[in-house]
Image 1 (cartoon, rainbow, N blue to C red):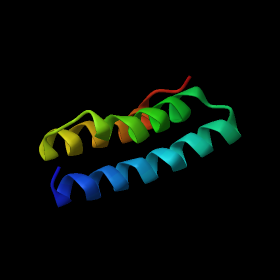
Image 2: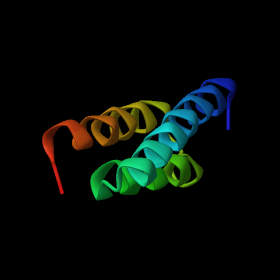
Image 3: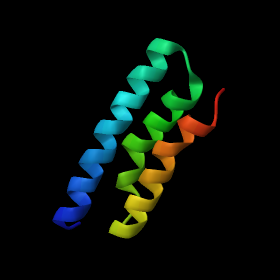
Amino acid sequence: MDTAQLLWGLLFSSIGLGYFLYGKNQKALAPALCGVVLMVFPYFVSSSWLLVGIGVALMAIPYFVRF
């Protein structure tokens, strides 16, 4: 891992924690699930561009999907 991947992983994991806490408090499933995935997926992605692309897509899902 290089520095960029570590920093992007930290950013997406922090946002994921916020999404998870919001989803838990509001009892909303979409933000809670996206939050968990945002916290875990940086461990499995090795490309910085792919990391950013997946992270941005996961952050957008709760705005478009309501369940």
